[in-house]
Length: 376
Ligand SMILES: *Cc1c(COP(=O)(O)O)cnc(C)c1O
Image (cartoon, rainbow, N blue to C red; front, side):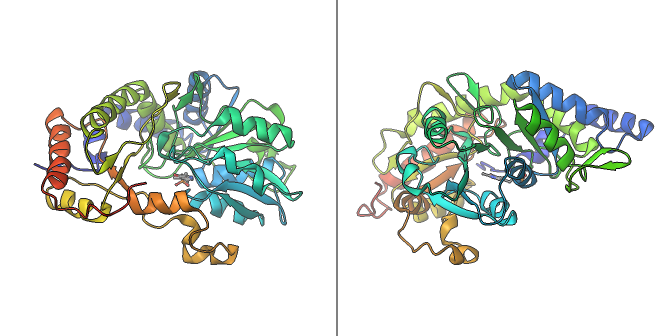
């Protein structure tokens, strides 16, 4: 049996409805910041219960624009997680600011216990990352940020529709950023992103920043960027977003099945689950003893597992200039060694889920693994 990780071809096998709307778009010529973008923005804002949603060119651009609107610039320090995807750090660096990293905990998100240690007089913003579709501990992070008068920009690129105590990711800080990249939760046919905020000034600044700083056709009020969500992509986004609740439900059902079936297995540790958090399982990770051999075993048996990520971002060659030595962030290091990502998407069948469990059970039952490999 094959258990594929990729599902995009499946998801868009019947796209007649989207093509029809794209055809309508070509009849209007409304290609930049037209009606489809406005419609998707208001659809998202209403669903998340937030005032402004601003479509931008990508999640990375969204982070950059939101940080700029929050006043981040050259010489500032911006605190984020040591295990994030490179884009978070790239966005901070692009503004001339210095990324300052904090270790994660087993939620895969920034550990609030370690946050205060790194704040300095140069800290200008905090960027918690809701990695894997899980939620960072926003009540605590907001309290710490508030005590220091710092704005919080949430990197919710992997966490559209995730929530904590019923409040959505992206809706806690001054602004939140989502990615619509094909590998994210609401996926389009290329790059795109959305910034959300309840702050009127930030909202209007962001609408300017994404469109050359143009207040109208002839007036440039600030120096901005060309970073608009494509109208065509907004059509795709609106179409997929209609199914968001169903995707959350199905992925949670699949995750629950894995959690239940694998939690008792010697060699596997399921990350802690929190009942007040709705995780969206953009990726489903487990901690696994002898991870590398398990990965090879799964691949050899047709189960397309991945590792997010085998090298913690702080150890990437491009970031040596930040001066962090190997071992500086032990939890991020442990995750890089032990984490494995299972296919969890909404197109998996019950047979495929059961087979995945069976393949993993067999690996540990056969004693094929190195039992001395640490898991904690
Ligand atoms: C994907 C991602 C981004 C960047 O989003 P793009 O739309 O690909 O630019 C930023 N941060 C995190 C955590 C991501 O996973």
